[in-house]
Length: 188
Image (cartoon, rainbow, N blue to C red):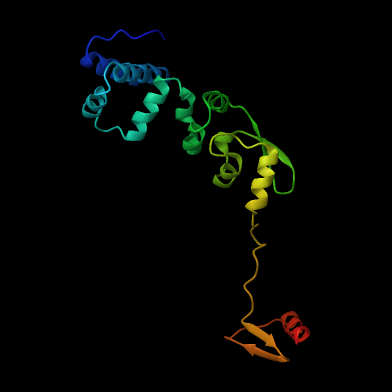
């Protein structure tokens, strides 16, 4: 991309706006213009916010990370898990944006090769640590601490019945099956 030669603050903002209008590669150019302005004078931070009031602080942080080479430009399009991916190293961000597949451990022990941009929220919690992609053994430990309850395998609500000293106390109205009555009789 080269070093930007910008003479005054109006040029910084013009260069930034020009970069934004050019798509992904323009975002990098805009980020470099923003960083050049900040490096020239940290007070330029306020000029950019005044010139482009619709940008959030998160957007400004992303432009600075792009301009400083701390965030891979493909991370901008990383999908619903972008915030997690942005915490990874530049190299991992680049691999993810390039479609690198990673291993995801299933509860039954099988391993799938998945694209981390196309996973569910539950899978993202399992796959992404704070700053890296978990290995299969790290995922195994994570799964042990965060067991998955399968639909249909939820624990049934305990019966409102107390068995004690040969007596059965029913605490609220309940309809029992023959099997449940047999279990209650076995308890007394």
